[in-house]
Length: 63
Image 1 (cartoon, rainbow, N blue to C red):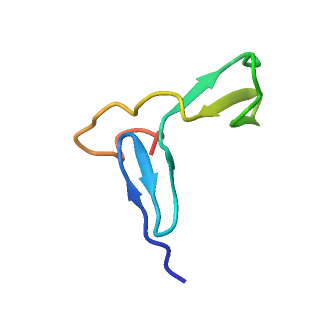
Image 2: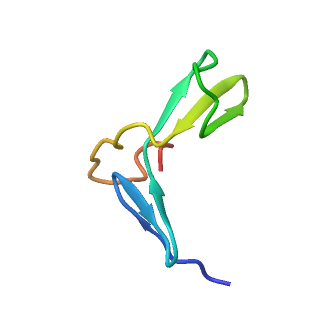
């Protein structure tokens, strides 16, 4: 099975949906846990801002 996506700097789009690409990492629990993933003792909140524009999206682990 192949799943095609368009991974932009602001929105990730699939054939049937789109969602914000921005993710912010916190070392403490954010004030709301909406759209939050806790992993490895850190909190990641989806939909918070834009990803920085990079020449190559594989330069870091954000993509």
